[in-house]
View 1 (tube, helix red, strand yellow):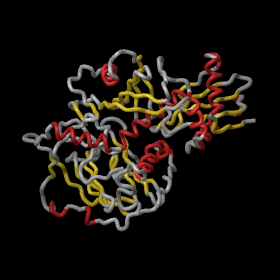
View 2 (tube, rainbow, N blue to C red; view 1 turned 135 degrees about the vertical axis):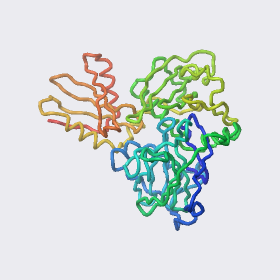
View 3 (cartoon, one colour; view 1 turned 60 degrees about the vertical axis):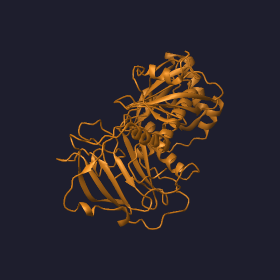
Length: 443
């Protein structure tokens, strides 16, 4: 992951609205904390330890955390290794537009740490960062600034407990395994005469964000994982087809949703991307006309009337940011055949399996007539987790559950019984048995 010494925006922050920030002048303004005043010492150069995802909250974001650490040590990373405080990797990922989450991973020990300030204020164990709201502008993601060789992190944000001055520049110091607030300086946004960023500079800034930030790639990887899950469970939208194991498509990320259109796949789909659960398909349509994937997508999501949609292409970013319009780009995802997907699932070893087993045992009573329960392997981005309940006397069922991040608990989504369609139940049973991760016996 690339560390920058100037403001950086995550690709989810569409619409991206910029303002020049003016700090309140006053006593001590010349003595603001500087990065060079808080050196990190020697930067860790060894191999990264595996992130220790110990809590359900940490485990629910295993893909985002593990992928960023892996990317930071890959050949694709412009700067390998820690990007903060000598031994930490700052992991950031989107959760809507605008919305940003952040975790810190100690690459020497694998320990996970939380940001110094969250959406709910100082201290709560949460990955959700506060937004940055400047005057009447549309809220955007907070501005973060940090360096590999310094223990200082600077955050411009508008926390919920900000008080009389809604927005501040916070100067936080990292000390071994905790944060210290050194200083906070109110931000004043002039109501009149505010300098405006010209369109070309805006386009360059946003294009840099989109091309460089791992959030864009993380969104593509999540879509790829969700499509593979749909293929595995024969739950793809009507009209979906898989040519040659990979597809080209146009994607759009907007507040609370991700959409795609692909003529190769034959469909357009929108997923809801709420905070409390993984992606959930909410609408679909056939994609079999003569338009480009991008034009079909803009029509599908109702943005065909936008005069200059914000689009990322080979030439950079074009179009104008507008509230709720999102960002559109084209890409290619590799899905593989269903046989290959089954093999991938057979090799999965989800960290959440023990918690799910305990939850199932607690919910299964002695008089339920359950003989055994087979749990299918699953990935961190899967919309649902399925398990088969063998009940010889009462009739077997397939249960669909998901992890609710707000409740911090597993939740039942559906339980299709044999009376609702024996063919579908048998099909799901066979799939579960082909990718089973765990079997619980109750006799």
